Image (cartoon, helix red, strand yellow):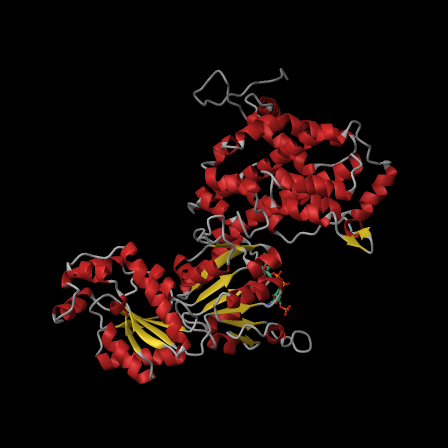
Amino acid sequence: MLVVVTGVSGTGKTTLGMGLSQALGLPFLDADQFHPPANIEKMGRGEPLTDADRQPWLAALASKLLDIEKQGGAVLACSALKNTYRQQLQVSDQLRWIHLTGSRDLIWERMLARQNHYMKAGMLDSQLSIWEKPSSGKLIDISGTPAQVLEASLHYLTQQEMKMNMGVIGMGVMGKSLALNLAENGVSVSLYNRFVAGKEEGIAQKVLDENPEFAQTAAFEDLQAFVTSLATPRRILMMIPAGAAIDAQLDALIPLLGKDDLVIDGGNSFYLDSDRRVNRLKEVGMHFLPMGVSGGEEGARKGPSIMPGGNAEGYALVEDFLGRISAKDKDGKPCVTYVGPGGSGHFIKMVHNSIEYGEMQVLAELVHLLRFGFGCSAAQVSEIFSDWGKGELKSFLLEITADLLLFKEGGELLLDKILDQAGQKGTGAWSLTTALEYGIPYSPLAEAVNARGVSGEKAMRVAFSKTFQHEFQPVEGALETWLPKIKEAYALARIINHEVGFRLMKTVSDAKGWDLNFNEIARIWTNGCIIRSGLMERISANYADPISFFEMAGVKEQVISGRKNLAEIVGLALTKGFALPVMSAGINYLLGRITAESSASVIQAQRDYFGAHTYQRKDDSSGKFYHTQWTNS
Ligand code: NAP
């Protein structure tokens, strides 16, 4: 066992550390002995250390802890005032933290009583000002006697000895992958899956049996035993279906949990349900994190993009763990960030999925047009997409579409054997209803949802194609001439999809006072998630405001040059019998947004004509409303 006793100078770290060392039969280490001479001199002069001064000291301590763990462990007394210092010392998940705290007056009194120590009592305030509330371990108040402090510490350590850092509920595709990812990254984890006699039995144990390499794991199908297995404050991640299952699981969990415990909903719940659940857990003194996770099964196992919102104190309890398991951006930073309060984490995941719907649909439209309009083989389309993916159009979805166009089963293209009825689970439609509720134009992404609906009516489509003798017409002219235009049209359709999604996010963020950070949201979407792309990297670096989205560096030029091409490709495809719902809605949306003199004057005149709804005039800037008697009758 490794134990680190932390606290500002004067809290009694050495006294407790030596007591623990004796009681546990482990050697005692004093972190002060590892300071380089320059630090000791500086402290002796009464000068506070900087983070840079502390670096060599923390590195030496971390290396010592790693070494000594192999020999059975130790007790270390170390100030470790900030969470970043503590993270640097967390060399093993066997390491336990005791944090000594007390009132400033009490610590001051004890410091003044000390002799022969290079710390000056006056440095206490500087230490207290940088001390951060720890995200793990046990806080112990020093107002008791040294014997009482030792007893409380021993009680905690013996209780914690076999406890797991985190629990995961739901051993389906995502829960299992995230649990294994946690275990691989040094987080001990308890796995739980519901028990349904004769149907769902031993599911969590099966996960362990299939993955014997992870020793720091335990399996449960009894909820009470699962909860008891966790270190406090407990951290539980639910990966189960959205809706009633989440409320039912919370009903079962809450009576078993205690104050300050944390529950995370990592599924695709509706954000208003999540708003409600954050409040529900807050009322009973617990933390709740509604958390979007993107990346599918592989992402969850190897590094997803993670979007936690809700209770910020709860986030601090798992920030380190989530950082370890998430994907990393191009600068090596974890693709996870605290998104904002309430259900904001689930809200941005919902919009993320809606953009995903749009991006998938545009690719589906192009595959169809290239194959059945331009007569390309699937392999040729794959080559075109791979080529685009080498440049600024790179994206995960483009890459996988190029791949699946080559996949053969029994020598034949698997794609052509897949029934053309697209499924959906909810997030796309929820985004659309939210956009309608907030009055935000959403037609391109709404069309991606509608297209899946139309695809579902297979029998009717087949019957109507006969009734109306519908067939695709070949496009005249060489593909080489069209290809640069198709590429630009594709690039612009994607920009429009993203603009629509970001605009909805900004509108709802403002209305709910969430103050979402969109550069940061785009940054955590640059890796691990399904809509990672070169475009997302540009948005992350340049996003300023939804109003100027189209004017962003590197985007404005594409809006200017791609506009005619998108219109031309859509026009061409429509006349040849191809439905391109997202690309057509995209060009309509863009033209609508850049038209200074719109056709809405006609609408206002009609409204006033039949319903006396009134209108405002261009030649009167006062905002006054007019009504006209349009007929004599
Ligand atoms: P899944 O493979 O179907 O697994 C669902 C898990 O939930 C199973 O362990 C299942 O247990 C359990 N479960 C089902 N109904 C339950 C209930 N009423 N009470 C308690 N447990 C129940 O689903 P998944 O793909 O892992 O998805 C989990 C969540 O993550 C969903 O909200 C999903 O939308 C979201 N998500 C999925 C992906 C993805 O790519 N798959 C990506 C991001 C987010 P049994 O085995 O006993 O049925």
